[in-house]
Length: 180
Image 1 (cartoon, rainbow, N blue to C red):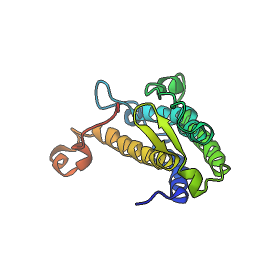
Image 2 (cartoon, one colour):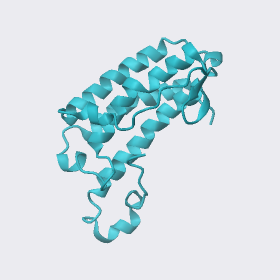
Image 3 (spheres, helix red, strand yellow):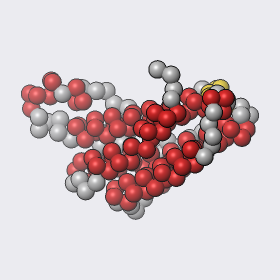
């Protein structure tokens, strides 16, 4: 499928509402537990999404439009979510994610992204040359990855309670990527 800016923005706009509908006011047993050592809880994932909104996606989009391939983007700190969650409730994180996402979508919509501008190139510190279109498609796919992760982490909490049905529940057989 070819990247569509309109479809990407539609998905990006819906992610905060989807997370809010799924997670707000759930007992902490669903949101603070993880899948074991080195994995993330739902709470961690929401902090990670906020951190990405602040220091990754829009900053890199603007970087590409302003500087092109030189210099490369700053590396992304995958542990930045710990700062975001410190001393906050999940409700506060959901509100913050919605707020920063709305701001980023508004900013993105003001960038006048023609096909030529979407083909602008930047340099990722690990992948090398990438286009703005690839970055934006990755942003939306990143949301989907973490929606999947959240479902998997929550299902993991019921792994024993489901008894023999476990064999039919693919979410319980999915290999994780919590820390990736």
